[in-house]
Each structure stands twice: as structure tokens, then as C-alpha cells.
Length: 401
Image 1 (cartoon, rainbow, N blue to C red):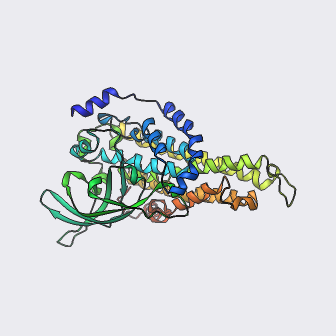
Image 2 (tube, rainbow, N blue to C red):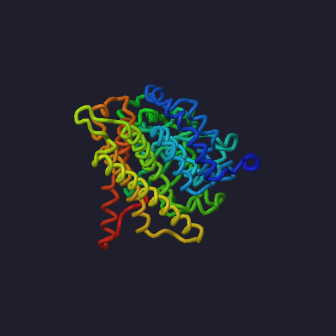
Image 3 (cartoon, rainbow, N blue to C red):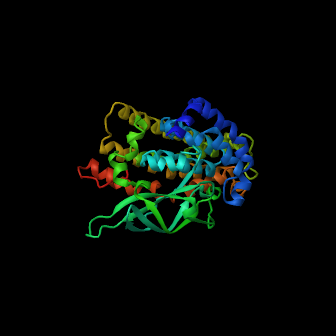
């Protein structure tokens, strides 16, 4: 473990304010690169390099491997800030940047393979349980095709979800399989109306051997009893993995809504309707929409910070979250994207006919936020039934919480 120790000695542990200052300093460049990023359907190499250099992907990474091991609130604060300029960039940061957290839960041999030589090694994912798994000596043979692997072209490993079926007919076991770049292909098939610059390509694996230690059991993540906790024993890594992941695909929408509101206000301060001759800044509907949107953003941030404050306080006390807390926190995360899409949707018609042009400063936020609604973790109906049943006295059947 000498290599990892050397990384720890060399690393500067930034403060939350320092990271947010770096994120805010990137915003003009991110806006300037948007057209290129969306046309190429992936983030520019400069953007990824700048986020790596800023240490954004190390926020949730263990200190043992050169990470900052900071509370999730810091990571999501940075993600929301980046989303004010470009939601695609923030989406990639959220998804790729949460993987160091899950990797820290793996057997340490897997962590050493990924970070032992380079602590800046990045990992993409696709958790769709669509792979074919064969149990073999020492591990598994994995094959299949997975979609939606955001930022994959800049990553050297991928995390893939699959089910291991019980020959006796029992319930299948869900695991995440960690696969190196040499064992998979990336298919360039990302053509969408929103989040175009995330480069969320398909991943193809053909009969790759994955040793058992390079897998993570979903049940371990649920029980918070993961192999990696033997070496990463700080309170951060006692959190349920699901609580970190679901926020990685919802929180960018909060920053996107702030970006849309900022753009709306810049236009509204100057716009005068050519039909009515009325200034937008004097329009009652516009004034009230600004008040509602900014208040909603503040509320969503407050809930995010409160939830993780509560979670980290519980972890530091050596306690466990209740099932009610876990389901409620996940439900609150699942509501974010649809709520944000509705808020931006309300702003759009208040800017008149020009708002529908593709060069409108608001339209990209609108498209990206609506695209994020497609992620399964952003469907409040799925976990809402469990939360409602729990309040009504029924035993919930939820494990990814």
C-alpha cells in the first residue's frame, strides 16, 4: 500500500470554499464550450482535464488513495454550481464522481487495481441489470450490452450491473461488476434531445472474466456492511450507497434551474414585448415566477443539506438510519428533477416566441432537465408507493435506499 500512502502525503486537502471557488471560476469556459460539447455529444477534453485538476472527482475518494474524503454535501454543492453553466458537465461530474464512493466499498484489491498507480483514474457505469453472468472458479464470466454510460470515453474502467440467478430457483442476487477498459467496447450511439454532451454511450462486454473481489453485492450496500469498510473505516463510508447515488442523478437539476432562472432574469430586465409593449420586469406573472423559482431552489438545497447533515451526524455517532429515513430521503431525491423541469417550464412562455429558438439562453437548461427525468431514480412513483405504504403501516420492500 506504499503507493497509496505516497498519494496521501502529496495531496492538498482543499476546503469546501476553495472547491466552490474553483467551480465558479470554470463557469465562463463551460458556457463558451457548450456548442462544441453538444455538437460532439461529449464533454471537451479540456473540461474533463480541468475538473480532474481541480480535484472534483476526488471529493468522495478515500484519503488512502489520494482523495479528499469529504462529506457528500461538498460534492453536491460543486455539482450544482457547475450545472448553473452546463447541466451535461454537471451530470458527468455527478455520475463519474460518485463512483469513487462505491469503489471505496469494494474489496481493497479492486481499489488498488484502479487507483494504485494513478489516483485520478476515472470509472463510468451502467447499472442496468442486463448482463449475462456465468459463475466460474474464482469469479464470473460476464457478457452483455449496457446503455447510458455517461462520460465513458474518458474512463478506464466501468461498473456494470447484473443479476446472478440462483440455480435452486431462489431470488437472484444483484451485483456490480468492475471491468477494465481492455475488456469492453464503447459504442457511439448517443443521440438525444437533451444532455447531449454527457456522451452516455453503450458498453459491450464479451465473455470477460471478473474476479469475485471486483464485484460489489447490492445487499452489502443496503446493509452498510461492505468489504471496503475494513480499510476505509471513516464515517463517510458507512452511508448507504443508494443515498449517494440517487442524489448524483438528481442534484444537477437544481443547479440547472438556477442557471435557467439567472438567464431568465437577465432577459427579463431588458425585454419589452413587441405585441403588448409591456416590459417583462413589470409583468406580474414573471415577477411571481422569479419569486417561486428562487424560493423553490433554496428549499431543495436546504433539504439536500439537511438530509446529508443528518446522515453524517448519524454515521459519526456510530448509529444507523431508520428505514423511514432512508425511503424518505430517496423519495425526496426522486422528486427533484420533475419539480425542476416544471419550474423551468413555467419560465419558458414568459419570454415570448424567442424562447423556443435553439439559441435561447434558457432552452438548453429546459431540454437537459427534462431529459434527466428519464432516469429511473428520478421517478417518484417508484419509491413513493413504498413511503406511503410505510406511513400507512405496511412493511416496505425497498432495498436500494
